[in-house]
Length: 34
Length: 541
Image 1: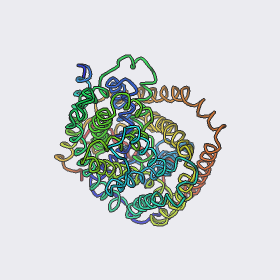
Image 2 (image 1 turned 135 degrees about the vertical axis):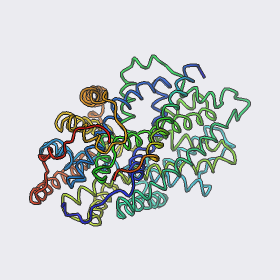
Image 3 (image 1 turned 90 degrees about the vertical axis):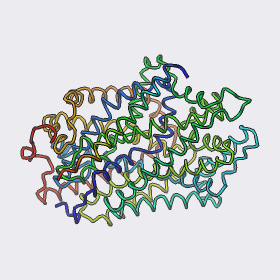
Image 4 (image 1 turned 120 degrees about the horizontal axis):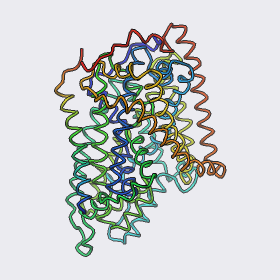
């Protein structure tokens, strides 16, 4: 795989996994509004 | 207020997030996305794809969630009523019919396709796929195509109603029945409970298949180029030249729309069952992120990699050219057949996962229609569901009968599931940012919000997203409409499909008129005039 392929794959996966991880962390650690 | 019995609500914040995520995660994540990426620049496709996500998908998601919750506080749960409130008038209310027509019409064929997944799962679980891995790839491909054609009835009209195709009808009946059972149980006890089980199971299934695919190595030493790294390279190596082709940007925007379920009228309905102070900013972002997790994280690694390892470059290119269903239902069974003893297990897990993905999407397609009939006709959930069942049985019979060449349901897919969602999304973002007003809308998004959205997105929602959508829509029309209109003239099945859609749309229009009279008589704010009391500018709480 080319360097460009690695950069795009790792960058894309990191972006979506980090975004989902951060969102669920916030959801699960922030109490519901009353 | 709307005369539909007890007020329904989600049981938890995670429940609504998983329901919207479940609606978004479907067959397109695993089958359509990798094909689109490979055909439009490989890894380079991800650049316009993420641009469309940030400048179109996520802002419109925020708008849809906020519109839905706002409409719900005024006692409305369907796109026609809610768009009437947001757009402050009759034009918008009738435009909102698209928000019921789109999910309902897509459900006519989507549930049929979901039943294929169940049928394939059953065939793998019981060893009835009939693909012999000791024969040549060409023979296996032919066997897979025969299974697909027999099961889906693409050979000729009425094939499925023949004696040999009883299982197809049975699997469709089971799938449709499951959907209706969940809808009848309601928002919290039906939809929420099911997605709370299905989404984690889907993630586990996808993870199992991913691990198997990434550990395939080089299964045939005689073909050293056909390995996992080669497969990943096929999917991810960028062709930056594709970025200069407008078709790439159009395909990326189309994939985002198709994938995260904006412009369907589903999010508006789901969000209308939220409480007044429930967060929509973070919840909306989380649902979109969940969809991306499945699409890029699993869809981008599994499908084409597996295909490349066993079928090589030419076989995978051929598979991509057959489109979503060719790749998913004809090529992948051949790929699974090459996996030895693991093949049937991986195949069963894969199609069970696709079945769950399809059902979590299909239930979200029935729910807006049920909610709309409840509030426009003033009936309870049971009666509203029965009306939808009657409509769907008639329409689904046509979809299942007129299977030749898949022209009938492909016509619905193009005009409703592709063209109309762009139109509805454009109208929604214009109504939200320009008529409801971004000041009020921004405050509405941030009421109860657990994140502060960067102010930059005010500009995006006011200017960038509408302009982006208009450009995409115009480009789509120029690129696709002439051929599609010509096809209508040539194919009676396409004319029949459009006639059926016109009848359904007319029925929904009449229901809007009946609803208007009921809502006016009940003193409801159907034109969104009482906005001042709700307008509380401010940031996140």
